[in-house]
Length: 182
Image (cartoon, rainbow, N blue to C red; front, side, top):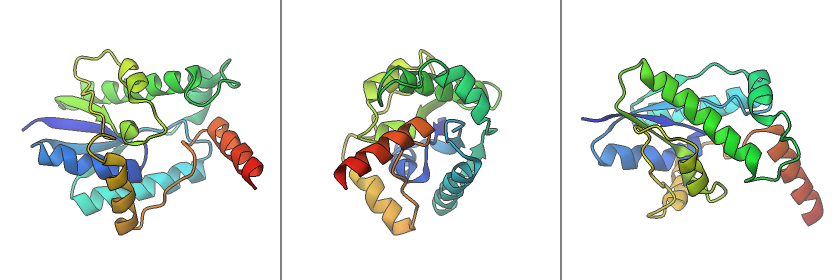
């Protein structure tokens, strides 16, 4: 059985990925690596929701160390004004996938993938381009109604669905869109 590490951006997105991976015969572990999240409180809230999903699925969840300051230095510095889906996001994908690959290196997993591709707000091609690791499974979880399934499962499990990716830049964009629409 292939052991797969699922980089988990959040419980709702992963809720469509875990069953698909399990159905394909994989042993799945969720890897919550999200130093992009703007506050420790928001990080803990999303981690708690990922834990709910892991418990419901009967699988393990591993949480990476949260270090937003390192993320700001290594990913966002100089890219603060980039639009959503721009270069800052591409750098963020690389950062999170590299951390997942590093964990995989010492932990005995065969492959890894990411729940980021279940969101219609994340371009799968850019996510796939963010890792050249041969163990990275380029699974587009949006396909076969993956996003629709994630919304349904998140509702069934009572998972908190956030309105932005997690970083302060995405949050500002969301707040700006909401102000225009109000």
